[in-house]
Image (tube, one colour):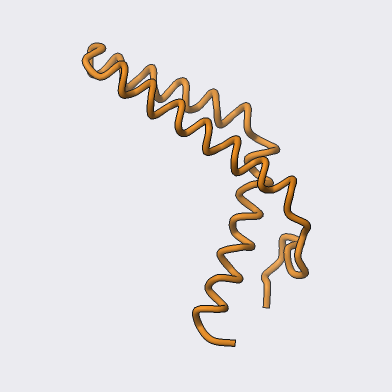
Length: 85
């Protein structure tokens, strides 16, 4: 197995783990996004409100996609929380 194959395998495992975390902690992550957006909007005195809202919406969509991908992918050997070899 070449180095690129090993990197791809590890990236797949990490994506799966990220998806699982997104599923378990999605509400907390969304609250954090909302709070961060409010803070940035306050610091910029509303000058970039539209862009901040757009970014927040895209981040939430990405979170949803990541969470959905985790439910659709079957677990692979080595994805039990330990190191894949």
